[in-house]
Length: 162
Image (cartoon, rainbow, N blue to C red; front, side):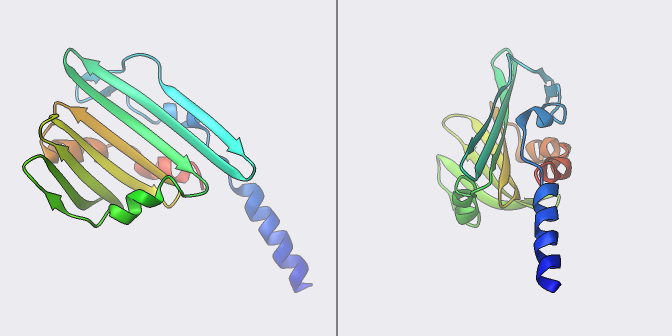
């Protein structure tokens, strides 16, 4: 009886897990980013191969020479997320770049600044299978970037694939 209960519980848990769908994320992302409206159509894809599911969504924003991009990645195999987790604790500061581990709303994150390219990014690891990267060019101040990303519905995005 116990074996049957465990199998039934596993089947129910598997059926309750929803697959990632980039179309669900569109409504959770803002129409503007630091005063820049969305630019062009979003790029999204849901890919399934065998038991592996991947979803991605990229939304771009533009106002003159200012640009921003929000990219979400879900990978059930974790192979696309694992490299970010591996280098997350690395701290680098050179004349050209900064790479700093940080936390945001309880999530592990990586702050990056490319000084020559005048571009900045914040990568937030939402779960072992999902991350969001928010990048701006020219680079805003770190506090401004952190405030903007903190205002995104990170917990809703993370919960969308659990």
